[in-house]
Image (cartoon, rainbow, N blue to C red; front, side):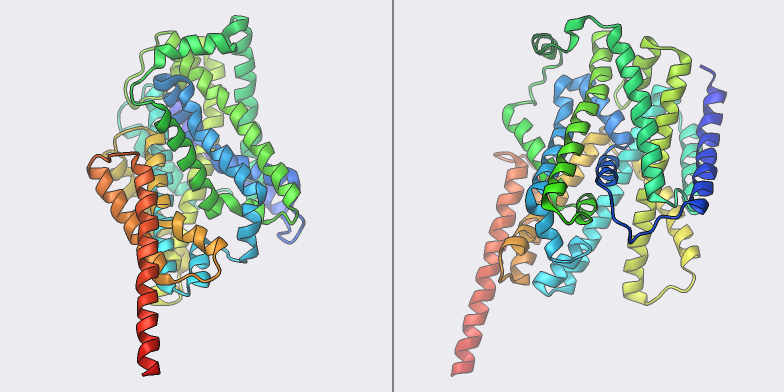
Length: 458
């Protein structure tokens, strides 16, 4: 494949998409007060997780671990179903716009809100870093092992974001999902027709799984991976937000189940291509995605170009959305310290440039694939926020000292067991220590209140 044509594709395609969507946006405004349809909620739930890191990261996981590559999407799907069963309605009843807002309302602590907001920003940076790593893996799969093409690609994304990106979420979500799903589904069906009938048979899959066996993949690890991903899903406000637009619990359950079932079935596509690369003995260096090499082996150059268009579209939409969200969150933090920003657009562009350069540098020093980065970020988020958040949902009388104890203990556990081995699953240790921190904080405030009451009575 001509590398110059690929470089042109990487640069020209986003500009064309931007022009098309901008034209549609000007003629089809979306009334934010209109009733949100079930289909739009399902589409948004799917688009929230179906980024480049899913298709590229899952194929990488499948190449090294076979069917275990499904763990991430199973965890997300489980989280969606839990939300649809009533937890999303419980969160909606608090009438809060963010996790930080919940902490401020329930624990009466602006400081806790600040901690939560800062951690959410860190999470968005981690998600963005995961997408960047997935993009680098894609480019390396195309044969661009140097940094020049990636820097050019990243510069176009930053420029794209500063120009406004995809302004209409409804249009961009539908356009992104339709093309992305359509092209991969057609290619997947075509490849299946070329396969023996028994490829996806249970006995055949179990037989092939032996080729991917790794000692680290034991039952506790598998369960922990699914559970931690599900827990992240149920406490991440960006994921739960689409379900807040639905007034009926039954409809929310249908939407979450539909999105979950679809994502599990769709994730079989990167699983197939990852395992197929292994079975065909396609040599994939560490950090490189097997997706493009195996597609080049199974299909033709034109098909690979169609796939690239779909992946690039998703990459631009996802990175643009994450950069915009980070910019907004950082500006809110700046305004909380220094007051209202007068030249907001200029500051927004400056933040975009600083974030872009910083993440580009950091990505060169991060080891592992996109999924490992995502899993680490989920671990941090859950360690600090899960315990105090659950208490705020289901306990009436909550104290900020208890939440601070849980947050601090969870953070200390994350740092400690990242550096040193844990006697049991470190994720379990994080939650146990966070719960102990919450309990200690509760005891401390009760002792203080008791002493204060004795002093007042005396």
